[in-house]
Image (cartoon, rainbow, N blue to C red):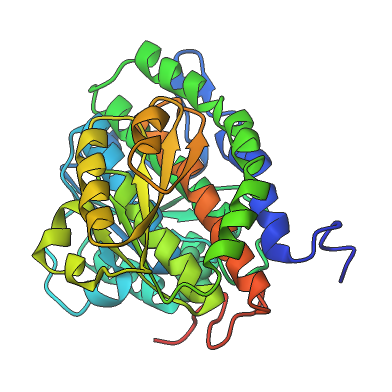
Length: 369
Ligand code: G6P
């Protein structure tokens, strides 16, 4: 009903705008007396110190949050980490043992493939942590421990606030692993958590770009092909941006690691193609500028998602630049950079007259294989 949408036209738009609060709720009450506490995990804390390998298993948007978690787990905790489609994991022969931690990410906690993959891992005596939004869901109950994202109810099929809070949850798990392994100390973790507290207000700033994004959507609402490119943590956001556009606007979109383009995808670029480039300031920024130049030379229009520190270079190279505030940590950048892509897909779909809350052929929760 209209009341449930609290003045927004759709649940998706409402949920996009709820992200500052949702992220604040994910972060709430996690740090005390010099230590990160994830008490609701309810697992033996020492077990975390012995983990020597992590598998992240998820489907759809949740898997892209898992890709961000992988970078954080490797960077902060120094543990090798793989991310995989839950639907693939149990049909091969993954090598797990009691020192392998499985993180199963699912907004609903009811996705059949994710539950089955988690059970498959547990059969091999690997501890399973669920990163879930829905309290008491099947996955949350089956797992050895659970970390809730506290995003609140998400109604729209296309996931938005569930995703950004999953990224936060993944960062928390990575920091926790680092702490339990003695790789990071309280003061470092406190510093990072302190910086993460700035995300809600940074998200508010990003949401102010809505008018600018709507104008871009008007211009590109009939674009036949959109390619999203990114590197490092920009890559999962490129995947998520392409998925959002496909899910609700039905336009053809794909994402690639920017460095892979010259191995094939760049052949698709022609006059009229749109390339969305994730180009925050950071250690891969220079490489992204080269990739932007390459696609532009072949006729693409480029929409760059930059940050305050990268705008000047982008303005000289891209057709359009959306400037986000600098993320408080490079690994947290995706929490901000996905928002303009959610809004871009939203406005394109709306302008095309599509029902964004109930896209064709899709379900919010996939309870079949
Ligand atoms: C469906 C939804 C997606 C979601 C995916 C995984 O495909 O449409 O938005 O990302 O399932 O759902 P889960 O509840 O496991 O995160």
